[in-house]
Image (cartoon, rainbow, N blue to C red; front, top):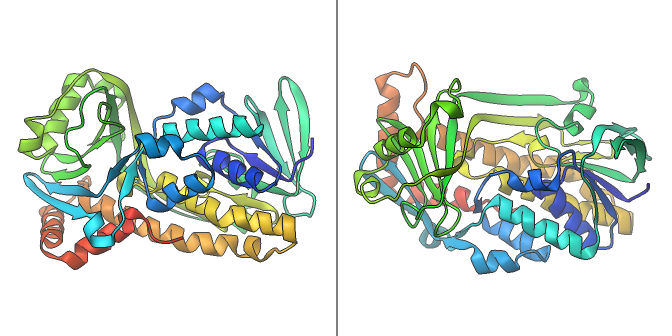
Length: 389
């Protein structure tokens, strides 16, 4: 097989890149290890920055998003019963959109099907070859046979555990990592959200997040030790813990019910530099992981696509390589700003093992400062809604 851009991974970043390139007349082949059903079963982020929404509109996949997405003009940070609203509209003029990553992925698949884009599922034993040459190719197994895909460029959109980052020789890349000593236990339930806007709760009982996917589908998280398993948490224990972390006036009114999905996710901050090696480009989780506290994971992947897709079009259609030459540097500038914000939100809202009483007082002081300083609230709002591309 031959194509112009081989895309490894059919998550939202890979599908969005394929969609944008195909609309510009650039041929792609997407290779995905998992089945489509498995990809669509992944429960992930639900807050979209304005820039992400604009990118989805540019890609022609925003019809359902515009109908069903829930614009949010703010969020709350709380410390026990103190609640501080961060008013995005007032402070920045821009809201965010609540719309699940699963729905984004579903919309992208439908759009790819409509234009006849080539996506191969069940692909195994992927090897990216000669990425540092002018003629890269990808070898893989599909339907029991070994195949070769020749291409001009390779986009690695295959996540933290994928082959793309590992293809770059170790002496050519540098990793930066912070592993946090806790995880998030997440629960999805068919219940009305606890509040009309997201609540990031710091409390004497630990961190919790009250979020949503729709007006009838809620997504909640509580901080748990890394040693905890899903089996350790009954629904009753989860709801009791969640309510103990939220402000009492919210907890007293919230609707509870059976969980329809439950999982534990560890938290880490991770960046691998550079994002380019020859004709191989890293995109999204293949290059960086952020703790979900700042709602940046999917949005950061979309910003990578923003920098890469036009650069690839210019290189393939005009012979102009300036964009691909500067891709890594441009993308990393925004990545590190998002890393800083996600790290700041994580340290501001979570209890750390072995911390002293001073740390808890600093969290309380930070929230009180936010409650009194418009400048502090504006800084948080500008980062939360997404810095400019």
